[in-house]
Amino acid sequence: MRKILVANDDGIDSEGIARLAKLAKKFGEVWVVAPARQFSAMSHSATFWEPVDVWPVDFPVEGVHAYCTSGTPSDCVSVGLNCVVPGGPDVVFCGINAGYNIASDIQYSATVGAALEAANHRIHTIAFSESHIGNHEITDKYIEEIATKLIDMPLGKNEIWNVNFPDCSVEECKGIKYDCIVSQDDFCVGYDLVSKDGDKISYKVNFERHWSGSEGTDLAAIIGNYVSVSKVKNYS
Image 1 (cartoon, rainbow, N blue to C red):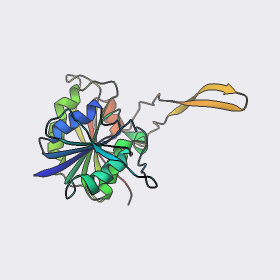
Image 2 (image 1 turned 135 degrees about the horizontal axis):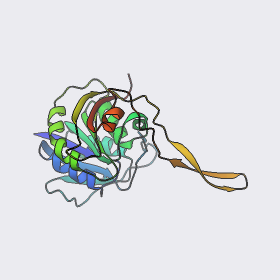
Image 3 (image 1 turned 180 degrees about the vertical axis):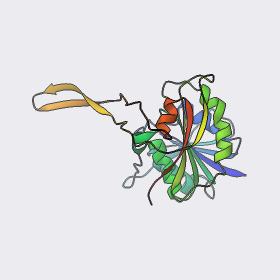
Image 4 (image 1 turned 120 degrees about the vertical axis):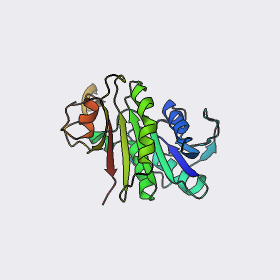
């Protein structure tokens, strides 16, 4: 039986990780290792100079071995595969993240950062994300089909599968695009002025995006109401 490690960046109490653990049970024995708090946009941040605390927790999915940590999402994967899962996992699932991880946002994503930590240890890994709006229709319809296909689909060295589900109704969804590339289109954040106090100026990120993606990209797929499946590579 496969051993599956499930991690995320939204924290142990997030709805998304419970949904993903429930799915993972269909593929094997499941261990959940997740941070005690929200760690979005922490990328591949890791704890090197302080201890990482790990403790068991009650979890809403029966039959799952669940642990919480004081560390980052990347720490959760590293501790999970080195210390928590006996003999290490065969597969890692990350998510389900509340918010797309597409285009340039991938470089900030701690969901993808955690997944790439697993890839660095040569573990087959899939990251799952959906809109932060909270519409699960498309995710619920397609996630098992996609996981079934990708769990045995080969990846190159330091690669992960990155899956994003569009925010639309089932009737509006046009299907799954398995061959997306990561968009290089302008999708960056800006900053808004919050306050000025003498020479001190405060700015806050403006999350307004440029929703225009080149054909064949993950961004274009989401804009077009397709599920986007792409490969993300850590380094050469």
